[in-house]
Length: 78
Image (cartoon, rainbow, N blue to C red):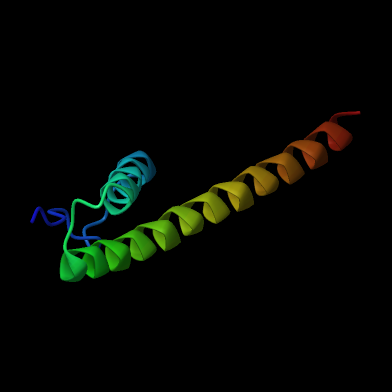
């Protein structure tokens, strides 16, 4: 059977990780993998999901920090 080819340990961009995660979900939903390959794909998917979630949290914190800095700068300008 076809097995996942991209290791989750390789740092990817958020977009690449999300695309790979979608690909894994399609494989798992499509009954294309045997049991062992399904478990490996699921494991990789979990790692990618955690990575994507961490990237989103980091982006959210950056946006909040930028917003706080803008609010302070605007208040000082008045």
